[in-house]
Image 1 (cartoon, rainbow, N blue to C red):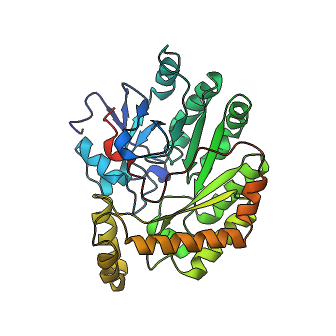
Image 2 (cartoon, rainbow, N blue to C red; image 1 turned 135 degrees about the vertical axis):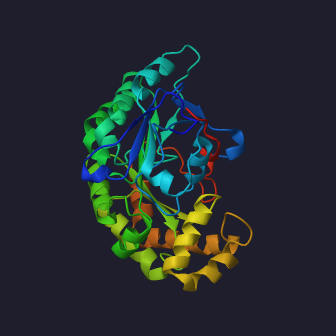
Image 3 (cartoon, helix red, strand yellow; image 1 turned 30 degrees about the horizontal axis):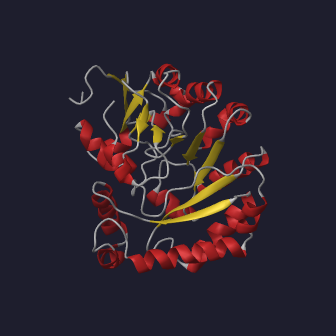
Length: 328
């Protein structure tokens, strides 16, 4: 048992989807977390019912947070997941506090709140019901198809407050998906989620993220991805080039060295200044995504969308929030 998780209950399950995984059930002390001003995010409050993520994305910027729990940022992050089992009850208590002023809450800003564990623990249904009952505005960013299970609650919440929904679809190449996002639903399945949410009346933006140098940044890849988003009903396409913060950097570059050693020198050049790619590269990639969004009509669709849009998405270099999330 990690020393940083006193009192946690460790569980394993026999079902194939949870093979090799351990879940640490904890009683969290708080569930609404303030975002430090220094992070320069476009929101102030977050809810993260899980820590660690079975999506196992090679590049996940939240990997380093696992080291605060005496776990490693690599395999442990993918297979040892902390579950805040009292999230729903705790949220109702915090939302009812006199000092709380119904500010916007962002979810999915660290690890995915609709990762595989959510199918068993069902924490998001309790969270969404509480947000609905208190008419508290919120947004969700996810790669998970499980969000469709909660469509009833999302519709109910949207009747009383502002609800923003976004998906993360960085590319549509399924060979690349299997290599870098092995635990996530396929891009095809995420596009289906996008279509169903759009058909349900939600304006759904997409983070084209991350865009991977040498792997998904070609004109052909960008155009195919944005065209698929447009066909599925996206109201926005926000590009985010890959950034490699400590923890993610070591894990991703080790994978790159094993599978695409021909790209290692290029990455060293692009990221010589730290966690973020060369500014000129970022500007070029983002410009090409935005041009594709215009070409395929996503920008026009967004302009025609009548409901209030979700809160502004993080800028390309502003996804460092969970470096500072406290231990439950």
